[in-house]
Image (tube, rainbow, N blue to C red; front, side):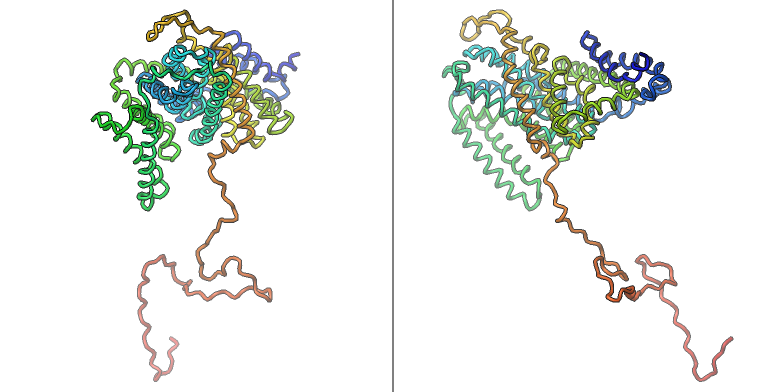
Amino acid sequence: MIEFIAQNMAPIMFASLVIFLLIGYPVAFSLAANGLMFFFIGVLLSPYSGGSINLAWPLLHALPDNFYGSRVMSNDTLLAIPFFTFMGIVLERSGMAEDLLDTIGQLFGPIRGGLAYAVIFVGALLAATTGVVAASVIAMGLISLPIMLRYGYDRRVASGVIAASGTLAQIIPPSLVLIVLADQLGRSVGDMYAGALIPGLVLTGLYTLYILIMSIVRPNSMPALPLAARTLGHGVLSLLAALLVAIAVSYAAYRYLAPAHGDNADILGASVGVILIYIVAIADKGLNINMMSRLAQQVIIVLIPPLALIFLVLGTIFLGIATPTEGGAMGAVGALAMAAMKGRLSLDVIKQALASTTRLSSFVLFILIGARVFSLTFYGVNGHVWVEHLLTSLPGGEVGFLIGVNILVFVLAFFLDFFELAFIIVPLLAPAADKLGIDLIWFGVLLGVNMQTSFMHPPFGFALFYLRSVAARVPYLDRLTGKQIAPVTTGQIYWGAVPFVCIQVIMIGLTIAFPQMVMRYKGAAVDPGTIEIKLPDMPGLAPLGTPPPADGGASPAAPSSNDLSQPPNFGETPPAKPAAPATDLSQPPNFN
C-alpha cells in the first residue's frame, strides 16, 4: 500500500488540491499548504517510490530563490498588471463608459437592437482601454441596463449582452490574462497581444451577428429607440462626410510623408487626419459654426480620445517602441490626463484606483507564490511527467490534445477563476503542448478564449455576479417615464448568458480550425530560396563555387603581394625603406 501511494503521489496530490478548492479554502493558501504537506509526505515516502520521488529537505532552500527570483518578485512582465489595472479603474471613474454608451446608443438607436450593438461596440472599446472585466460589466450594467429595460428590451437579451461584452476584456489586448499566460508559457507579451487581436475582433463580430439574427427572429425583444429618445437628432450623413474628409487628409499626408518616413508614413498620415477632424469638431461645437450635425460632433469628440489611448498603449507595443510594461505606464498617465480633461480627476478617485490596484496585484502575487510552492513539490514527485504522459497519449494527436485540454479547462472554469487556471493548470499543460509541436502563442490564445467562459458560466460566473450586484432586485419607478419597471431575476441573467457561452465555445472551435488567425503574429513567411548571401572577395582564394582544375591537381596559388617576412599591416602607411648602397662593379667582389 505504501509503495502504491509513493508511486502515485502526483495524481493523489492533484486530487487533494481539487478537494481543498471545492471545500472553499482560498486558492493561494490551498496551493501553498498542499505543496508543503505533500513535500513532508514525499520526503518520508521517497525510499518506497522506486525513484519516482525526488524530494529531500535541502530542496526547501530553493523556495526563497523562487520567490525573489525572476519568476515572482523580480518578474518584469507582471509589472504590467498594476499599470493596466490602474488605467482601467481611472477610466471607469472618469465617465468614459457613460459618454461612449450614450453617444453610440444614439448613433445606433434608429435600428432594432441598436442599444445592444452599442453595448457590444463599447464593450470592445473598454476592453481595448481598460482590460478589466469588473469595470466594464459594472459600468455598462449601471448605465445601459436601465435604458434597455426602459425601452422594452428582453431581460435575458439585455443581461446576456452586457455580461458577454464585458468579458471581451479577457481576450482583446491589453488583457491581464494574456499577460499572465505569456509569463506562464515563457513567451513575449507583445506576441501574445498580436496573436489575440484577430480572434478578439472575430468574437466581437459573432456577438454582433447573434444580435442581428435575434433582431430578425424576435424583433419585439429589442426594439429601436423611439424618436423622443434620440436627443442628438439625425446626422449620419454628416458623420460619413467627416470620415471621408479624414480619410482623404490621411492619404494626402501619407503620400507626402512616405519618402522621408517609409513604413511609418501610414501611421503618421492617419494620425494627421484624426487630429485634424478632432480639432475641427471641437472648433465647430465651441464656436457654434454648426458645419457638422450634433450627432457627428458628439461621436467624433467622444470616440477619438479612447482610440488615441488605444494607439498609445497597443500601437507602441505592436510597433516595438515600448514594452507592455512601458505601454501600461503610458496608458495609466493617459487615463489620468483623460480624467483631468473631463474634470473628474480628484484625490478620492486616485485613492480608490490605487486601493483596487493594490488588492488585485496582491491577489495575483499571493496566488503566484502559492503556485511556486505547489510546483516545487509537484515537480519533485514527477507530476509534470505524469501530466505529460497523460495528455500526449490522448487519441487524435495534436487535435485530440487540443480538444481534450479545452474540455478540461472549460469544466474547471466552472469552479476556478482565470488567474487560478493560469497559475495552476497552464504550467502543467505547456510542456505537453510544446512536445507535440504546438505553437505556444496559439495555445495561449486558445486558453484565453476558453478562460473567458469562466466569467459566463452559471452559477459561478464572476461577470454574472457583477451584473447581479448592479441590476434591480425589486420593482422601481423609471425616472424619465414614471412607469414601474420589473426587476431582473437571477434566472434571467443566467439564461441570458447561455447563448453567449455557446458563441465562445464556437470561437474556440474556429481558433482550432483556423490557426492562421493567431499565427499572423509571426508576420509574412520568408522563402529560403530567395535568400542570397554574398561574401567579400578574398585575395589569393578562388571564389566559392569555382570548379576544380580539369587535371584533378591543386589549382595554382594566386600570386601574393604580401611580404610575409614583415609584420602585418593593418592600414598604416609603411615606413620608407632605406635605399641600398650602389655596387661599384669596377672593383673585385668583397665577401667579408
